[in-house]
Amino acid sequence: MVHTKLSDQPLPALMEAAANGDWGSEIIFHGRVRGAEKDEEIVALFYEHYEGMAQSELAALAQETAERFDIPSLSCLHRIGEVPVGESSVRVVMRSPHRAEGLEALAWFIRQLKQRVPIWKWGVRANGERFPSPHCEGCDRHEHDLG
Amino acid sequence: MSTAIHVKVRCFSHLRYAMGTSEFELELTSASTLADVAQQVRKLGGSAVDELPFRLALNQVFASSTTAVADGDEVALIPPVQGG
Image (cartoon, rainbow over all chains, first blue to last red; front, side, top):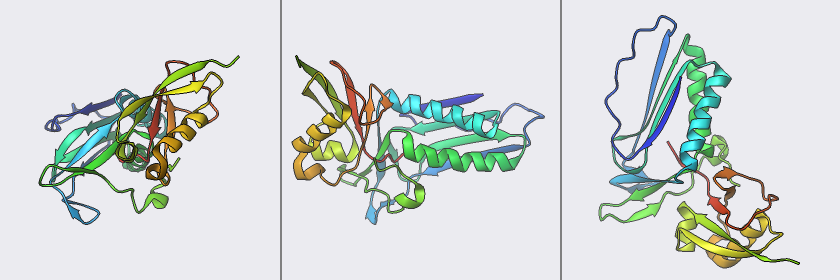
């Protein structure tokens, strides 16, 4: 079971999953907005996305992850638009028989998301101005595809 | 005989900032590829886009620079993504 969604609304409250005797592991990851972008103070991040392709790439990535790591339940919600500092921008919930495959799948999924799902960050200053987030200093380490 | 085709070019993030627009139309010859689109974009953007890396997507799917483009296609310039 794979579920993905982009939304311009705050993430909904987490719901307790229905009891399932096959899932020994449930891993929940939240990515949150920090108060600075490359040393510049911000009040929010604005998430730009390529309508259509962002949704299809995210869905394809989730399906690929589930098949590659044999994950029976994977959910990813990613916010778009403005996300205030401190709030969650992304939630991933990975449920699997054992924690090992879940942890491995989560790390791979997040790394791939940052390489191929067309979503970009803009910093938002206190006066409302937006500036494109600088490219990641750790691009090599994070294996970002630079075209 | 080579005829003219028109493609819609979409720009995002740093490229949108550098090009000053989120989309524009480009006229090309009918035998053009994505590499030709990229070359035209770099020519139009000049020094503002010289150092900006990007991948190319054709009609919402990543594609190689040798892929042919057709009249009415949508080409997206995809700078390094930053989701999460």
